[in-house]
Image (cartoon, rainbow, N blue to C red):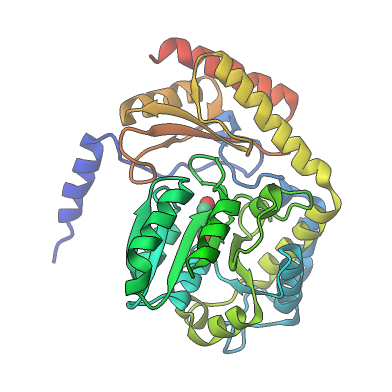
Length: 386
Ligand SMILES: *Cc1c(COP(=O)(O)O)cnc(C)c1O
């Protein structure tokens, strides 16, 4: 069969202003070459810049010397002492009895939700949850009920309506919302979960290492207890690749027995495990890194707001600048690129229609001069794109 039908779908995406292509950057730092020019990059989720830290790089190199691949799934022969040591460190960091590594954060979401709920159950999900949670809910076969973004009372109303007809109930939410940079009301959701016989899972891909006194994440930042499953990724502040789930021992034992993304996918590679462990140690010892990136984010937010741009309020290194249409987001992103700054346009299906945006992220590697350059570029682009 010819695959020409794919062209039809691509034409449609183009007509909607939603067509995407891969851009190849020359490097992974805050400045990189793209199409022959050096650009200031405001797009990485490595918020602390630890993917370029000499200690993290050395740890990965040393691990690679003993083997580059785990060779099989965790259960077959893919669990080493290094995997277990990182799991213990992640569990301690999240204040939980146990943690379990998976190949990616995306897989960690799939593993958690499909292990916790099935067809007889109901899952109550924030309207702006990450795609990995949405896909996980669908894959689980549970009844899915979506509540308005950040609205714990709406989550409770859904539970009151649907809980009795189902075996189990699970509330799922991002801790830091990936495209909005705002925080879930975790204290309220934990209360709702407790009062309505539901479990609570938080995807803290963006909070881990960045928020909270020890870098423990959104729950630590908000002082929220009573979260049953803490999902995190190694691929953002922890400067590596892989995902994890922290919680009680029975969660880990259930994952090892039932979670298909763990059973049927290769364990994280040893250099990735070593890099994440080295990064986690730095997260614990160097709070100044999170202080720096959060202060950069505040500076950038203030400057963009003063220009009259529509910046979503928040405290995280994710600074969304709302554009509305796909067309305006693409034009603004192109104008910024001409001004020497790389910020991709985020469009549906990553965000709801009509809320296309520029998703600016800063890292601890950016300097005050970088921030000035970013603001000057936004000023120039803002004059050109209305
Ligand atoms: C990035 C992200 C993930 C996926 O993590 P990976 O390790 O990149 O697969 C899951 N949830 C949220 C909220 C994310 O932003």
